[in-house]
Length: 139
Image (cartoon, rainbow, N blue to C red; front, side, top):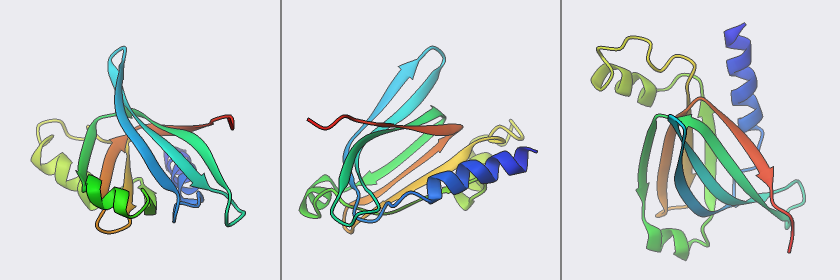
């Protein structure tokens, strides 16, 4: 059953049209005993020219790894090249083996959310338990 839920979460995230969507802001919010990573986005919809302002929340984030060239991001209009969600990845394995080796299975139930910005914008990788979206109203 857990594998089916993992597949559903990954598939739902991976169906989003990421290419040429825009990353406008990134923040970490602490709530109770967990951290959430929050992205302010303009998502490319099914219509080629339509961008929808949205908030993506990666819930219960345990690792955030950023390598972002802010000038490069601006030069490329803040565009995202691609984003993927993985239930298993080399990054999760590396973190488990190197940083969590005394806590076997610590990342079970967590996902690797990977964002690749238009070069030279960089990358953002987050290990988190789930995600949700909130579309913002148009001004």
